[in-house]
Length: 138
Image (cartoon, rainbow, N blue to C red):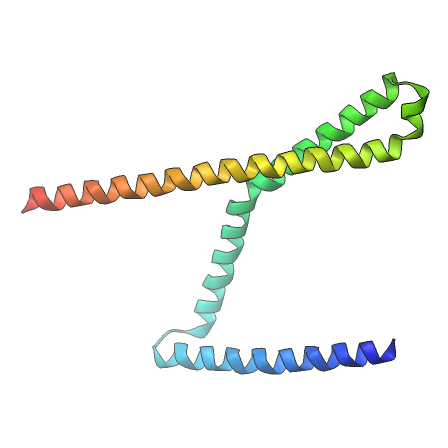
């Protein structure tokens, strides 16, 4: 057990050294290009946080909704079911939660896929409109 902890500490140390040197190189390149590293880091963090929530709101919402639905259905099945079902109530809860959670993630995937297609179509149409405007101006 102690050997595992020592190996983990060594790997974490190696990672920290490599990450620090990479960060130093990145900051040096930003300064050479005339960009303030503090503003760049702040903007990068804000972009990541906003992009994360924009991309995952639908997935988290559908997952929570379907898990709640699974728990309600499990309660109804147990309340109105036979004695045999009551003995399997723990398995029923876990099974339904994972089943409806999986359904939520599949639905989320298809909805996000369709939304991405529509965004690409909108970009293409807006490019075509810009090209037409440029031709009219000439």
